[in-house]
Image (cartoon, rainbow, N blue to C red):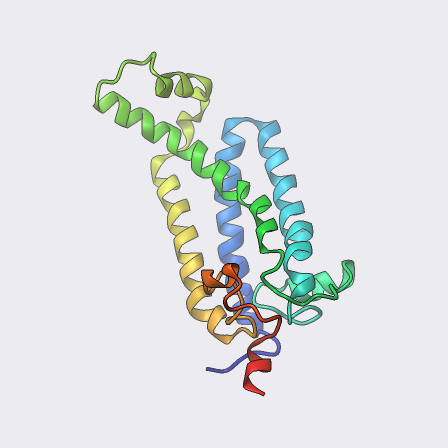
Length: 198
């Protein structure tokens, strides 16, 4: 399998297509909850992708200053100093701060579906699920079909980069996205695929 020094534009654009589609639907779901919450979500998303992600991963990456599969390697080199320690998985835990970008829309989108289930099972409305529904009753405009599409986009996005980007990456042997064992320290030796080939 060819290991890229710089990813081709076609692979980067495909990643951004999935990412923007996912973020667009997620933003719609959160904006439906309230304009201020939607605005905060968008700001957090921007900060998450262009600040938190580069600080957690890009500055330790082989592709720092290069075209990585998401296109942030060159961005990171402009705005953030390169880390002295190049252990790719060492700061992966900080990506927990990106989890709200999926947890919030997934949570808000599932509430109306829980309501349908509650109604079908005739659970009394004063139970916690009913109270939760009452708190976010304006979410009724989020179509269930759109929520399913959102989950499908997340799944397809992950499928795409795991099959089309990860196999060509210098970090596939020490990346927790490609192999979760890297988080246990069993794979991360501070090097890259190129290092192991030499």
